[in-house]
Amino acid sequence: MLLFKRLALQHLDLTCNQLGGAGLTSICTGLIDNASLKSFRLAENSINHGKEDVKALELLSEVLKTHPSLMAVDLLHNKIGNAGALILLPAVKENNRVTEFKIDSANMDDQVYNALFRGGVPAQKGGKKKASSKKKTK
Image (tube, rainbow, N blue to C red):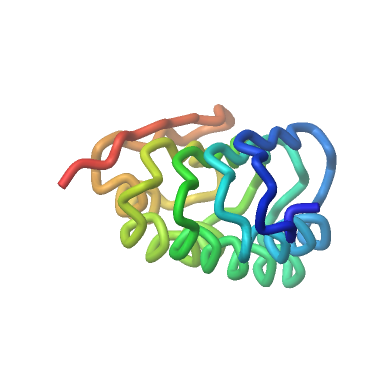
């Protein structure tokens, strides 16, 4: 469905669907040619830092770099760790259209987390999950 170029879908909330890497790959394949989506909610989808998940995050990174209208991405309660964050970092820096990017600092070094948010929100460690949303500024 996402492959339809004339699709007017603006908000896609797939929260709590246990998509994992395989599901994320399928969704991102459809988003490559989509031009209407503005918000993409993927909270609690068992996206971690395994091989399949890393490949899916690489595809999500490509979508983030090039998508013409995507402004909000929610990856809360997924344990992508340093590996996933480093994959997404270039896309978040390059795409000024994304103004809301939510991710947990769980399993992520402070340095990597702060680079992702340009030092705007310090990560909190210890069993808590820290959610952050930062508006990009030039």
